[in-house]
Amino acid sequence: MTCRMAFLGWLLALLSGCTSMRAQCPLEGGRPWVEVRSPHFTVRTNLDTETAEEAAQELELLREGLLQAWGGSFDPQGTVDIIVLHNRSALEEFTNIRIEGFSTHTEDGPLLVLAGHAYALSEATADITTQAHELTHYLSELALVRQPRWLSEGLASYLETIALRPERREVILGHIHGAFYNQVQRHGWRTLDELWEWDSKGLLGTAESRQYYASSWLWVHFFISRHGARFEDFQKRLMQGEAPRQAFEAAFRGEEDLAGELNGYVRRPGHMNYRTITAPLAPVTSPLQTRPMRAAEVHAIRAQLFLMTPGASPMEERLPHIEREMAEATREEPGNVDAMLLRIRSTEDPFRRLALARELVEHHPDSGHAWNAMAQALDAAGNTSEEQEAARLRAVELLPGSVSAQNGLAGYYARTAQPEKGLTAAQRALSLAPGNASVLDTWSTLLFQLGRCPEALDAQQLAVDMLHEGTPQRLRRTVHDTLARYQAVCGPDAPPAAAPPPTAVPALETP
Image 1 (tube, one colour):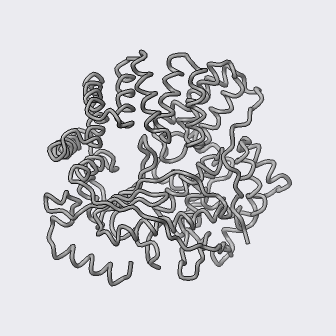
Image 2: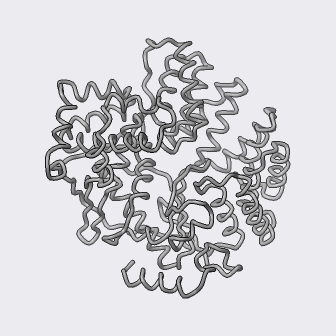
Image 3: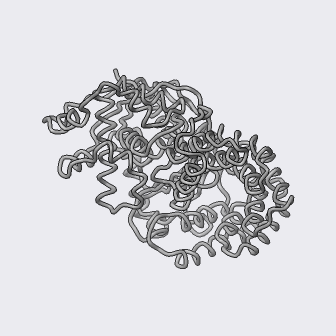
């Protein structure tokens, strides 16, 4: 997208009045919405079609650039859902804070929401930190079998400074993170021992949390710049399922004064005398599938944004907006699956949820999402009969690539003490999402029920290792509580069992 195009888009938005500043349905005066599918992204947006397709191509370019951090041979399966709103003010309608984007996880996988012209990745002035940070989390979960939180956040912060140079067919990694560099210069940094204990600290205040993030970036930047071979060895060990502390100690054996080296690295003038990594960037010519979105789909997206956008607005304030959008979606398209799914998920009464789910399945018997929603509603209502099993089996049949459906079936067998029957679904979920803490938690439960105590303990430790900033607090507590229970039952000295590794890939490379 050229600067001239960006200016014209801003001018048209200004001249067309307040209505165009909101991401409304076209039938209510809003801009048309389109969906663009590329090999690794599904972009839903109210940008014009040409710009929407450009956004999808540029996201593919960003992904290609980030993959160079693992040597370029790493190319995992899976897609990421993206919602791009056409101007910087559009998200203000859905929250009481000013943000230009956010990321979250739905049961179907990661979701990234962007506003404004942040999609213009090839512009020299484009701010792509949010996209790069969140995509790094997604990719690193697939690359590393285990990753302590400081490594997860440090890598994401390191790679969010990525610079794409498609005209030169190159990408530059490792630029200084200005905000975090200033943070450690002014307020110091956490030791590596403190970072290893980060996830056990619970919720931290804003200032303390920022120091942990800045310190994680600093240590990762230092290791890549000054100890590239050892850091690569550390990551390779994590890919093979080694315990993080053990892997680190083996990779950095013989280094006696890392803390002293880091102090000199920070204090030396000239931005730490750092070096960047320049890697080749192949042109991206991904095939695209573009279609106009129906009005009901747009209302469903708006309901989703009212539900998920961060901010302090309580649910009772959001619900009227959610209800309106779902009602409009239903009016435009009775029985719309997306709207019905949102209504089911936002309904607190478990028996009302079940009634809605049954209605959805009745109208859409070939929808795997409908069957998955009914299975979840049956579970919430306390129904663990064969009806729930049948619903979950149907969901898996219709959605073979769904992590939620596979993990849901495995979890059902865990809750009904049928671990042998749950192993296949759990292994499929693991193959689809090897770094998903919820999937690992289900896998460990089945192993524990089968009496495979050391393996269960190791799998649960993997789940703890894969927690990061986006993990819901409820899941975080469950994972930690379960680990403590397994440690008490299995004993701290139980020998670890190797986890099934993903496709082996090289670690971060230095020139």
